[in-house]
Length: 299
Image (tube, rainbow, N blue to C red):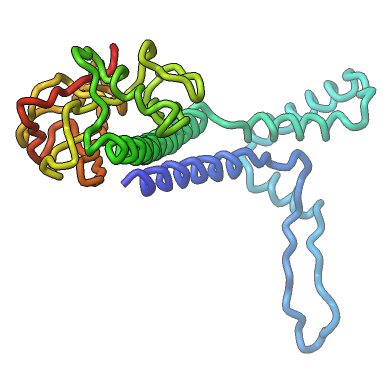
C-alpha cells in the first residue's frame, strides 16, 4: 500500500514540474512572421506571390477606426521618442541574460513541489528504518538462541562429569553463581552469557563471573532424569514463578524487567536441547518440579 502512494506522489511532482516548465517558456520579444505556403498554379509552376508588409499596414489602417489609428500613431511617436532618449545598453548580452534569468526563475521548484518531495523522503525513511530495525531484532533473537545452545552444550558436559547433575549453588540468589561453575573447565567463552539484544557489559574471557551480571535465567536443581520438556535456560523472565500457557514470560512494552529483546519476546531452551523463540506470553506450559528454583540474573 505504501509503494503505490509513493509512486502517485512522485508522478504528481513530475506533472507539476512539467506544467511549470511549460508555463515558464517566455514569448519571443522579436516579431515573428507567419510563413504561408501557396500551391503553384499550373501556368506558373515555380512562382509564388509574397504579400508586401506595406500593403498589410495600409489594410489595417483602413480597417481600424479613426480613434484607434490616432492612438496607435501616438503610441508609435512616444515609443520612438523613448527609444531616442534611452541610452544604448553597454552590455550586448543583456537581452540574453534577461531571458535566461526569467526562464530559470519561473522554472524553479514551487513550495508544493518541495513539500511533496519532503513527504516522499519521510515515507521512504520510515519504511526503510522500520525494515532495518525489524531485521536487526530478528538477527538478535537468532544470535541469542545460538548463545543458549552453546551454554546448553557446556551444561551437558558438566552433568556428564557430575553424575547427571547440573550446576547448583546452595542459597543462590541469581543465575550468575551456578552458571559461573562452567568457567573455565566446561567452556572458556564468557561472551555467550551476554544476550546480544541487551546492553550488559562484556565479561572477562575465561574468568568466572559470579560477581558480575549476565543476561540469562537458569532453572537450578535439575538432573538428567527429569522430564525433557522442562525448561533449562531462558532470557531474563518477568518473575521466577512457574507459568502456564497464556501467562506473561517476557516484557510486553519493551521496558524492564525481562526486556532482553524489548517487546519481541525471548528465547528458551529445554532439557532435551530444544530451543524456541516465544512471544511475551507463552503458548506452552513452563512448569518445573518443586525442588527446582528459577533464578533470574542480577538486575
